[in-house]
Amino acid sequence: MDKFVITGGKPLHGTVAISGAKNSALPAMAASLLTAERLALHNVAMVRDIITMGKLLAYMGASVTTSEFPAADYSFQAHTISDAVAPYELVKTMRASILTLGPALARTGVARVSLPGGCAIGARPVDLHLTALEKMGAEIATSHGYIEARAPKGGRLKGGHVVFEKITVTGTENILMAATLADGETILENSAREPEVTDLIVLLRKMGARISGDETSTLRVQGVAALHGAEHFVIPDRIEAGTFLVAGAITNGDLTLTNCEPRHLGAVISTLRDAGVSIEESAAGTLRVRGGGKLVAADVTTEEYPGFATDMQAQYMALATQAEGASTITETIFENRYLHASEMIRMGAHISIDGRHAIVRGPAQLSGTTVQASDLRASAGLVLAALVANGETTIERVYHIDRGYERIVEKLSAVGANIGRVHAPSS
Ligand code: UD1
Image 1 (cartoon, rainbow, N blue to C red):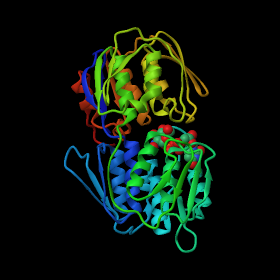
Image 2 (image 1 turned 30 degrees about the vertical axis):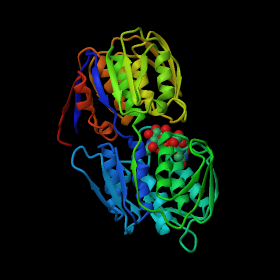
Image 3 (image 1 turned 90 degrees about the vertical axis):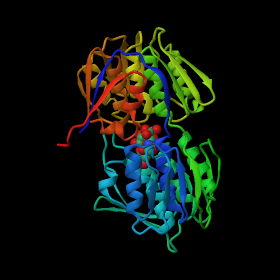
Image 4 (image 1 turned 180 degrees about the vertical axis):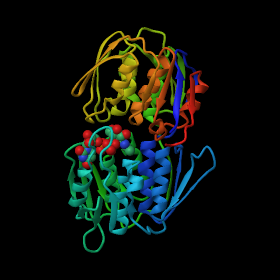
């Protein structure tokens, strides 16, 4: 298993190009199951989860082609779906495999997806996806660790009125995709409004879907008999951009981020400004972050979009360790999403956890040691902490970060970080 070795203390200077959003590309790829025609996607990040989704689509019978490095251009064509099954071996490495359930069921009338099981950041069930599909007439059973879904007689889902009990991002995406091919109108209430959901709506519309309500929590979908091919440019990754904003601030550096969408980073930018970070939109799609000022404590609560993203919580915690005063972080989206805190404490951070709240007292001089990454965003938080720590930090289990950050070692090295990857054979 690969490790990162980071020697902290170097301010980062220069320009970083932000990649396409993994969380937008994944549902877009799953949408290729909705049509027999070709779907071309551009600005797709070369990260592990994208490779896993490609494997899953190929397993189901789609042809998947990609350009040589940088593999940002992909095309998918599912002439037929030979096997509407998402096997355990793939689902266990990526929960987002559940995104194939809605489209495969809508297209073929049957689908089997392995139950995702637990993961490091809490129970993360898929009950809301299943209840919504039942509202659309699907029969759902679980047996032998698999979800087995069947459309009503005739093989076509029916439009339905779905009110999500809780806001779910992939749940909204799954049901949106299923509804595009259903018979009649589907209304989705309490839907997620994340930019990745809106990007999916834009893509589905290009494929011939009839959807209204973009960026609101009520979406209406008029089902159509068939969808067609399309070409789409995936939106920039707001979480990668937010991570580099923190990297610039925490190292007292000066970074310019290109290819980003500042509009999607509103809550992150305003929280970082509250903490004393200087951020300006220097040109369209470009953000400049400058450190050097004093960082001060600022409280943050994770919320659904447009609130502060839970996927930025670990990175913000790293920043808070360097800010003067006590910052209270409240995690409202996932239980058990503070696994990175104990590793930061081992590096010298002053953090106490009380249920959903983490109180971070700073500034603390962090010192390098060996730490373990526990999930994708936790790993990013540890990389940021290592960038300001005294001496050398070894981060183990970086396969988590490879799931979602494109060429992070190369991108950080290019702006002056002392970071290297150590390849270690899997044990
Ligand atoms: C997506 C993102 C992930 C992000 C999360 C929250 C992708 C591929 N992943 O994950 O990076 O951290 O949104 O912004 O886009 N829940 C249920 N039942 C369900 C579904 C969800 O109880 O059927 C709960 C979850 O346990 C969690 C909350 O709802 O507490 C939100 O989860 P959800 O929005 O579904 O997260 P994902 O879509 O898995």
